[in-house]
Length: 606
Ligand SMILES: Nc1ncnc2c1ncn2[C@@H]1O[C@H](COP(=O)(O)OP(=O)(O)OP(=O)(O)O)[C@@H](O)[C@H]1O
Image (cartoon, rainbow, N blue to C red; front, side, top):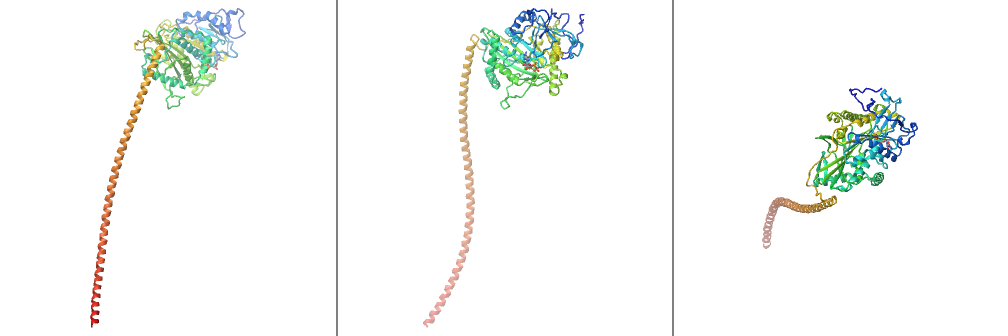
């Protein structure tokens, strides 16, 4: 019997078990059900209806039913893809319908089922389902490639339980490149002939600004500084590039009179705080660990931006990948019960493609790659301490994301986007353009098809099915327009402009060097004069001091001489007196002797 849905909406939870999200009246009804892995293939033996198990087969099937049947939805709502992670012994509780787009969860009663609702058979429809045999190439070709070729703004979001392969899908590993390296290669190949090699245009606070020469030089310096910090992975990137080029044939756009400048930024939302992952560390600090500063998300006249976020100008996919790896090193990872290297935060890597058209108009495409932290059952995994706090904040933001999608889903008939609670978490604030339908939203839902994750997977699938049902009424494609006539002459080719700019910079460099030499010469001269003046001042001061000391000495000596003179005079006077007395005594004696002598003579005569 059909269940009466009624008008009253239930309060949905995106982390705990809930009623099936798909309105059973409209759910797809496959002719037959296929078991995902194994022997449980239904009796009909028509191999053409089987789920593909090689990349090439898959592409063929996908082109036939997946993308082609979904074209109408491409115009209106998010695309939701399901990716099943390869596991050793996959659960038999999941099956894919023969049309390839519907996941059927078994009606089997599992010991994990906490309520009756989860014991029902459920059908979840997707834009495409990638089973465990589908490789990275096909995931890219279905989910992201077309968006980039069409030059649309798109948010690609990986959502799933912890350890289900979100990071693997977005980044991949050293051999199996994920969506981001492929997208970068695609973008740089596409605009190869239009790339402008100096940062003249920049998005500052969501506005396209033409940079002055000094600002351009500053941007180049920041870029150089940050790239110097990146681990050297050139050989690895070249290998990856070869693999990607072997997998895809990206088309180059003709060199129209458009100049393209590409910028990347990378943010992390950890415990509801927004951190810049591409900050340039101050020179004196430890170069590997810049201080983390919490940034603000600002919404101004419908434009969302992160105030003060570093955006780096990149000239090649290799540079962009290097910056991505640098940001990744700064991300918060931890070991959890289900993933030894689990992302403990949501992170968003943004590639902004800024274009300057000959008409003077500037346009912008943004590609946001969002790796959501895995939802987690904290009660089951026994998470404690800081891991618990992280898990709670991850779960809260994912819940808000679910509420936003739910609200967007219920807006099909109305057109009032105000009721979408995107302001309730940093993640939804940042992704509001996609959640409000202004930009394309592609969601890659990852699932680990194991019995033990059955309940968690049902929640993830319910979440995904809501997103799949959304119909946006907003106008798509974001374009910033600015008129600017003073930009470089557009009748010239990009190469000539670059050459001219380099020549200008070289001339500027020469004149700056000359100015520098002149300043050094002036400085040396000034120093010499100063030295001379100082020397003279010192000599004068010394001479004065010597003179005064000399004078003091002379005075002292004069006084001493006078004193000695006086002493000598006194001594001489006393000696004179003494000797005069002696002379007097001797004269008296002579007189006495004379008189005695005269007496003797008289006696003789007699
Ligand atoms: N499709 C796949 N093919 C091969 N390996 C995969 C696939 N999906 C996931 N893996 C492997 O599973 C492990 C966990 O994947 P990953 O780190 O991407 O999970 P996650 O969803 O990002 O987890 P978390 O949310 O905890 O960060 C990795 O070792 C990854 O290589």
